[in-house]
Length: 503
Ligand code: HEM
Image (cartoon, rainbow, N blue to C red; front, side, top):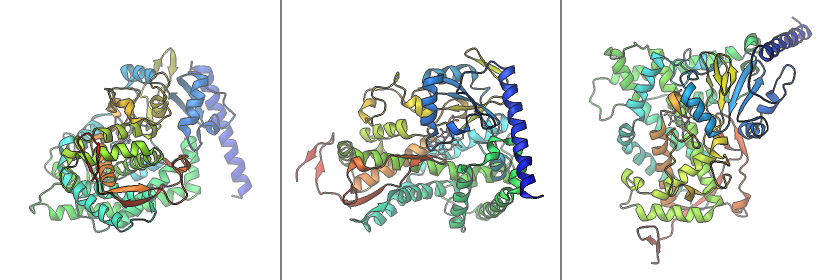
């Protein structure tokens, strides 16, 4: 087929399906208001920007807190205020507990068998409960303190070798988080660890890159003729080989006395002893562990980088949090109980999550038609919750755009999903199961880096010069990785409460 015919067929297809979709959605339903839709693309041009959460908030101010967008062929509802999220969760959480899936989630997560991609139902509830209990519960996270202490000792040593020279903070944060997540999930057994990490990076790139077929699902053939599907299947095959080896290594090691059981050990034991109510296969286990490795890394390391960006921009907050940490640590290493007493550090983490948490929640989809505030929402509509817009809602927050950890000082607002103005981990049945693990990781890395070192900006860069421009891939990151210079901490001491005691 010559390129012209192919192009002509493609355009005809697009026009036909989009006109059909636009006409049917407009005439048959009482949908929420939204910006005018262009032919063929609908509102794609208003959504696909570097900071979609900001673009959506701007549109919501004009069209209202519940808004309809047509993203190609995908009918989408956007919710942008805490009140609306509360209303949604009260009445429609169960109905909106499915996830819209796509060809890449299908290929990489073994036909959507991981926690995040599986449809709401018995299998989903069983595996979410298992990962929460066996990897992500508060007790489990405490039991991984030996991994955190071990890894952080190594990180502190390596930063000591860079004193006085600028380092790429993003690389430092993401490698540290990745090591913690890998050791908790896989143990120390994985001879192909570097290839596994490279393949995971490729998968994350695939997920965050633009794919027209996600907006025009009827054009699946494009993934075939452009060779994308073949490429993804090849990556998946390589990854499957590595995951298969990991399971084998764990099976061989089974029975030998081990101090600590990792997630793979647990899943294999539960599978082999028939302890699951709904039996699972090796492919299910591979999908689950792959997701833990990917979901566990990017959001936590992003939070650490944003926290450091804000601290470097606000030297007074930096000084206050370092004093709090240094006054709390009792011995030579930082223990979990030290961290529990670092009150100001906890406020810094909360404020970072409010301003820079996952900005738009992972999408949901409704199983059945429903009525939301008098609007008709047809089944299988995609739902986006703009968590960032809730976190910066002017009716809920004073001076919402400023970084002020003190705002949480006497506040009971938490990020556990019940306070809808602060939902960086989501809410309802699909809330993030990794909150304990994430907070444990973020607080441990931040406290160690802030306790052992002071930090400067490279020569000639002032705090107000730090570029806070965002770029959204899987997570929303600073567009330019933070470069900072570690320096040895001064030999001073702190009284309880963080007051400086002169030597
Ligand atoms: C600061 C770090 C993190 C942030 C901000 C974060 C945020 C989120 C958000 C917003 C969701 C979607 C929730 C919803 O739809 O309501 C989610 C889902 C999920 N997260 Fe996290 N997450 C973090 C760390 C982790 C960690 C450490 C793990 C595991 C090791 C993890 C595993 C998951 C999984 C499996 C889901 C899917 C849950 C479901 O579909 O029911 N996350 N996360």
